[in-house]
Image 1: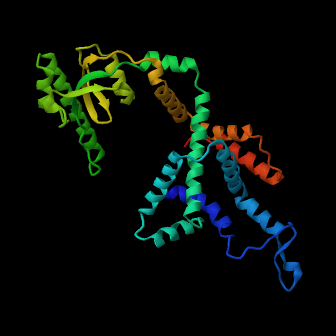
Image 2: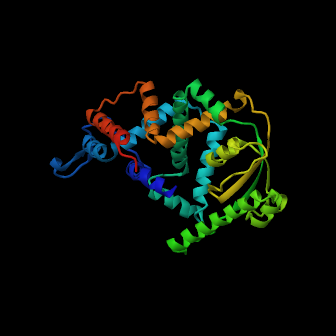
Image 3: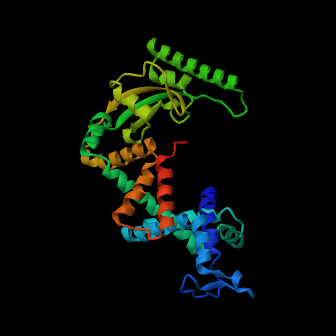
Length: 328
């Protein structure tokens, strides 16, 4: 969160510092903003505008454009306000006093908490744009194919987990040896199953999952929508009453699964929302630039036009750089 504040704060610091208790009304670009005894040294509003435009103008202008559009596109709601308050309070909790908190946000260009809230609100609404845009890229065929290929009823399963117990203080060789030992132990467990020992017996002897090892490794019924891809694929392909023929490497270590039973497959309408969310996440993971395309899409929808030629060029260059930059 602090890193984000630094990025945006660079822009807001300059513009935010322009505000003061006593404001000067400047109606024309040639109006004098700063005067000297020698009038040739005077600084006009245009002089300041050109300097700020070159250094910070396009970032600040994009925020203003998006704020105007998104406040019209998405009305404020309880969920948005709750998100904003959570973000502000989370940041506030880093500091012992309110004074320290305010000093921090002031240092990054936010004059008060309300300005900080507007920043978080803008980010939230930008995320809404991205989600809505990605949904337009998903066809009915995409949804149907995902439903047919990956959705099943809840599966009653058991597992044996052999953890890979590495630590940061280990050398790479030690980590590799620990992983090899865990895999060897998991294969021994499968050998025991192949020799006729029950899943309950092997689980109690080999599993590192304290929550299930003394209960036959029972995981109960699991919703496949909540599982990672590796585990879901394994449980889906297993026949009822069968266990994994080889240890499966997951984020938890090496696992062996037993498929006990399976419920009827839910209707498409019951899982359609989840499927769409999953597919949108997959698209964004594969192409992070879609977030920039989404914002470009919503701006074009409102037919915005930048009248300052320099800022128009800055905008085009900024978007081209974002859309054509190599993935990091």
